[in-house]
Length: 225
Image (tube, rainbow, N blue to C red):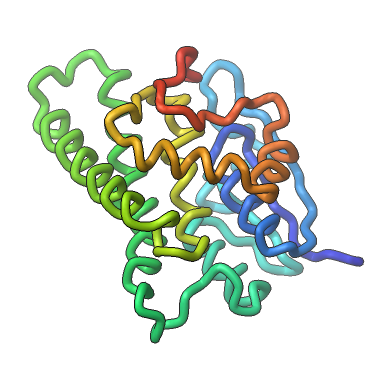
C-alpha cells in the first residue's frame, strides 16, 4: 500500500508520540529517524530545515508539512482515525478527554522543561520560577494520580489519544530531567499498563530501538542532559 504520510522522528524526543499514535490507529506511515547532535543534543540541521519551527515532531503528508504536537494529533485524528481514540462531545467523559489531550503540552511539559533549564543554569537561586513551577507540577501529578486512581486511562475507561500524548512527559522526558514517580502509585501502574500495549512496544522499537522506556517509578539514573 502506498503511503504519503512520513513521520520525521528525532530520536529521544516527543515525536515518539506520533509513531505511537499511528501504531495504535493501525495506519501506514513512512518513518525517517534523526539523531541528536552529540554536543548540544539539538536536532541536526537537516531536521530543523524541514519546517520553520525547527522542532520535533514534524510530519509530511503529500504536499503538507506540519509541526507542533497537538496540531499533528488533530490532523491525523481528523484525517485517518475514523473515530478511533477520540471521544465524541456527547460522551460523559469528553471533558476529561479534551482536558488531558491538551494538558500535556499546554502545562505539564512546559513546566518540566522550565525545571530542566533551571537546573542547567547556575544563577537561578531564589528565582520565582523555581518556586512556582514545582508547585504547579505537583498539583498536575496529584490530579493525574487521582484520575488514574479511579480509571485505567486518563479519559476514563477507554484508551484515547489523550494517553498517547501524555506518556512522553512521564517517560522519555524524565531522561532529560530525572524525577521519581514513587509517590504516585496509580501513575506507575498506568505506565505498567501502557508498557504492555503492543502498539507502544512497536512504536518504541521502531523509533528508538536502543532506548529502554522509563516506565518504572524510579528516576532514570543516567540523564541525557
